[in-house]
Image 1 (tube, rainbow, N blue to C red):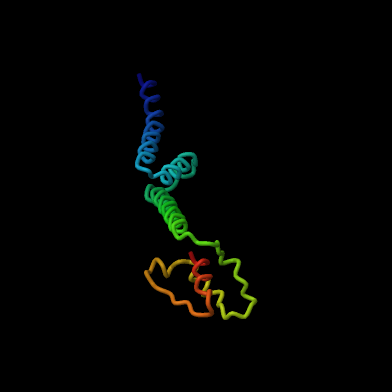
Image 2: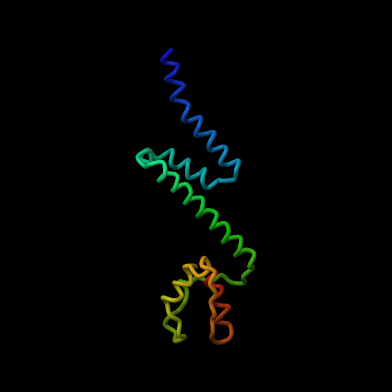
Length: 133
């Protein structure tokens, strides 16, 4: 009898984990489900407190959703060319401050609902806009 209880107790966590994964996928929380699956496979995760593990799951979901939102916005913007902050040539005398560009590229101004004004010759604003999107 006690052997049967032992088997049941051993299988229960795996069954609960599978049910939890199925529910997460059903709720379209795919990133959280994937992160949970990774946590299950890492034995050292059991050393973390529940709050720490849960925080890791939430962070993964947040990042996944933000990435999807950004990709959707970029796709809907229908930009003609793809710009990259790393491709800016700072050696040419254009008065571009590298630290300002990297700070703008971080996107804090968007999260803080701030506006920026770009001045310069024709086309500069469009170029910088492409780099920051």
